[in-house]
Structures are given as structure tokens and as C-alpha cells.
Amino acid sequence: MRRWWVPAIIAVLLPAGAIRAEPFVPESDDQVLEHLPSSGSPAVRELRRMRQQLQGRPEDLALAVQLATRYLKLAREESDPRYLGYAQAALHPWWELQAPPPEVLLLRATLRQNRHEFDAALADLSRVFRQQPHNGQAWLTAAVIHQVRGDYAAAMKHCLPLLNLADSLTSMVCVSNVASLNGRAQEAYAALLRALRDAPETSDNLEERLWVLTLLGEIAARTGDVRVAGQHFREALALGPNDAYLLGTYADFLLDQDQAERARNLLRDHTRADGLLLRLALAEQRLAAPRLAEHIESLQARFAASRMRGDSLHQGEEARFTLHLLGQPDAALHLAQANWAVQREPRDARILLEAALAAGKREAVRPVLDFLAQSRLQDVRLEALAGLVRESGS
Image (cartoon, rainbow, N blue to C red; front, side, top):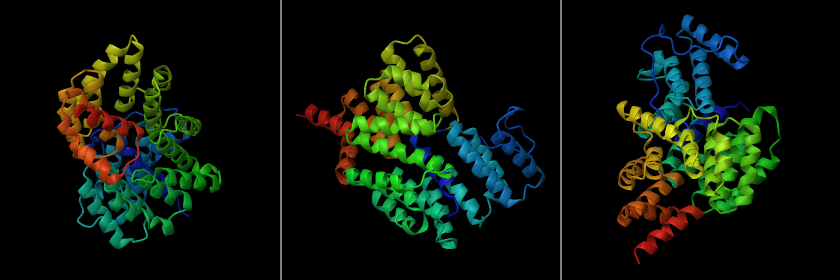
């Protein structure tokens, strides 16, 4: 089966906070984007070669799609939003066409999803479905968008076609991820674990296995199985020690287990990504580390720069920064509410609950409590916070 999974799973990772910035789009093909190391890895040399080829053949659709896909993969691996702009630049000749080719529509949907232009992204995907109803990547990307928005019925509807379009592990990732957020966490965990054990271990599916192990760790953590969650995260880390999403998720887990020293050691060399620097600072706060003030100042500058760009994609992380590192619960609540209006993942619910409790504004949590009841989301951390809310009103 053709491996469409790798670029598709980028769409799963982008909403999670590892990459959140408006991508820079060059004004012309002559503008220097980045000076790559002259003696880089084979992957870097191949990227340079492809970019030079595209400069000479800007209308080469196959090459442009291949390069844009590579940039998307790098954006995830490096947690560097510049690569998202480079991906859009590679697709420039087709970007504004009334009827772009389906492969461009799919990539454009992924980039729009990253900017939280969810309706536009779904519109692009609908056009892909009309032209290519068996495009598994399009179904997965649409499922991810609906999941991020908290519409689990729509997400599952878009996962189900993958049972016939993708390999068993890929389809189970989609189905289990949604089911785990919709009242069937234990069932989803067991099914995904079986699928992972049944899938052959090959060099071609290492990234897929990394993502599955990360998801298993997340589900186990939400259900309170700390020992198993830690085991899955460590197994995933052995496969992808520099995976930005995994690093952020594992760091959150360590912080929840009061293992700030381990979280700091995990992230000390990963400060380029705002989300990872935030988690490093949270660990340093607990340890009274000497570089905490420096990192708080750096985060303040990064968030300020985002606001100057008109970028509102950082609101969930900025809410967390504002509440826990600046100690400003009212401002944090405002950011958390704006973030909740756009996306509704467990961490988005958590920061809204935390900020509302800290601000003493119990009424602000009603939308989250209603969502938790309707979705039947199982998360021991959210259940504890919801319990505090109920106690505060008694």
C-alpha cells in the first residue's frame, strides 16, 4: 500500500501545540528562506537539491507536492513553523486556482488546518472527496479536524472509511483516537494495542509505531494508569527522541507526576519550540532553577511577537503561561475561553478549568462541563478539576 500516512499524521500533531505560528510565505522565488548547513545530513542535501530543481521548474506539480510534503514533515520533526510557509511557497502556482489539483487541495487543507482555518480546510477536503473518494489521507485529515473541534460523531464518520482504505494499524489509530475521547477509552486502548502487536516491525513504519505508542501513553494517562503510560512514552522516546509532539506530551505527563527534574532533563536541549520552552519553564519553576527568569522573558517576547503578527493560535499555551508562570488568572481565563471557542482537546478543557478556578469564576466552566458530560470524555485530571468546581459551588 502506498504510504500516505506520514504526511497525514502531521495533521494529527499540529493542533497539539508543537507547531503554532503563522507560516512565513516568501514574496518571490529569489528570496532566501534559510541557509542550510553545507555538510548536512543526506535528508538536508536532498531537500536542497529538490528546492534547486523546483526553482528551475516551478510548474512541476509532482516535484512541488513532494517538496511541500517534505517541508510538512520537517515542520513536525523540527517544530519549526517556517517550514509550513516554505510548503505553501512550493505550491504557489496552484494555491489560488479555482480548481487546484486534488494533491494541492489536500496539502492546502493541512496548512489551513494548522492556521485553524477549519471551515476552509474542510471545504478543500470535500472537493478532494468528490474527485478522489478513496483518498485515505483526505478522510484521515478531515477526521482530525473534527476531533480537534470536539465533534466526535463527525470524526468517527470520517475514520470509518479508512477500515477499507488503509492498513489495519492506520485505521485503528483514527478509530481508537476518537473512541478514546468519546466514552470508550479502555476499549480503544485494547484495540489499538492489539493492532500494534499484530503489525510487523519494519523500517517503513517506525514513525507510525512512534505515534501509536504516544497515543497509547496518552490514553493510559487519561485513564489513570500511570505505570503503563510511562512505559509507552519511554518506548516511543526510544523511536523518536526528537519528536516535538512526543516531547511535549511526555513532559506534561512527567509534570503531572511531580517529576520536574526529569521533565527539565528531557527538554533542556529543545527550546526552539514555544510549547517545549513553556514546559521547560514550568519544570524550572518547580525546581527554582536559575534560568527560569530568562525563559519567562523569552516566552513573553515570543507571545508578544505572535500577537503583533495577528496570530491567535497560541492562546491555549499563552493561557497556561499566563496562569502558571505569570500568576494572572483573569487574563489566563480570557485566553483560555478564546482558545476553547476554536478547539476542544483535553488540554484545552484543562486550562480553562484551571484558569476559571484560579480566577474564582465558576460560571465560566459551564461550557466545558457540558462538553465533558456530552462527550463522556474519560480523563482523571479533568474529573478532579470538575470535582473542585462542584465543591466550590457547594
